Image: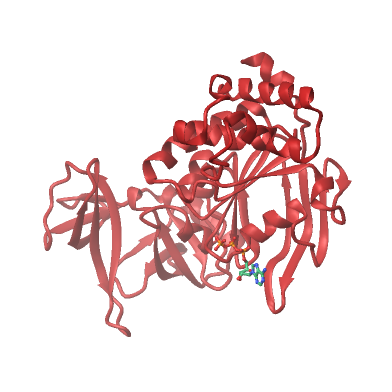
Length: 383
Ligand code: ATP
């Protein structure tokens, strides 16, 4: 297979967005977005519906003219070039092949549309089909293909033009859950093999986490954080990213940081929970933050429960148990909001062997290094 990858020899490319803004009337769809998408990278744009992912992708493709900013591909500004002159391929929904055409004709379609010579078409389709390992299926129709093979044909149709980059907008959204999981790993493997810079848009965080080299999290037209999936998960830069990534979501509870007896104490509102930060953590926090209201964050898998008190822990009661097979999600009640009378819960993900029943007392503990602290005003992470 190695040879055929070299044969396809798609240009390598880097895509840069510099302060890109796109408005639709009063709606700021993309707001001053700057990002560098590295050569051969698999970058996933992730965010809730309406956050501006598709519009950003369409500005890269040239399907939307920008109101401000620049788009640069391989050090050349393409901001004012037509889509055809940018040499970038949109990969459409993976199921959207022409059903009446063979695999060969589906892949050849963009070349035929551009009047490429017949022998050139044949050799390019064959190269691409070999790379994607679908050369034995060239005479079949889409309905005779598996989901994975259809995905390869859709990719082949984009590759055959030898684009500088692939742009994919929720290509798996119409597939059933099982097929999506299979396609995720296959697409990631293929992208690494064909070595083409790829920008993939999704609102599905699992899709993003499992495929991306880096994820760009978007919200309200702005990029919130660009990092590897691991960094995004472990070190969210602000409250939006913290609550958007992870399922169940990170526990977020309001509280305050105060200085008491030359120690830094974190207390959670409406609960009895309050704990002293280590000197090391206190020093780190104090460097970036003046004492004020905070939001305390902890992922459910970091909330440890035990049936008996040992050391510095908080007692609470089990409110609800969700059995998930390998793990259980246990909601424990920490207190009650004195203004709204709504209970304050913490979710804990424990091994399914954990025994406990609703109403029973449990003791909560956690390691200091896994906690997150956000400035309540700016919503920026300070730890
Ligand atoms: P989704 O996941 O729902 O597709 P998205 O993150 O891709 O959402 P966009 O489609 O880029 O978001 O839309 C961003 C904002 O711009 C939304 O408020 C949307 O309603 C608006 N918008 C997008 N395209 C147009 C258009 N052609 N005319 C007017 N408003 C638009």
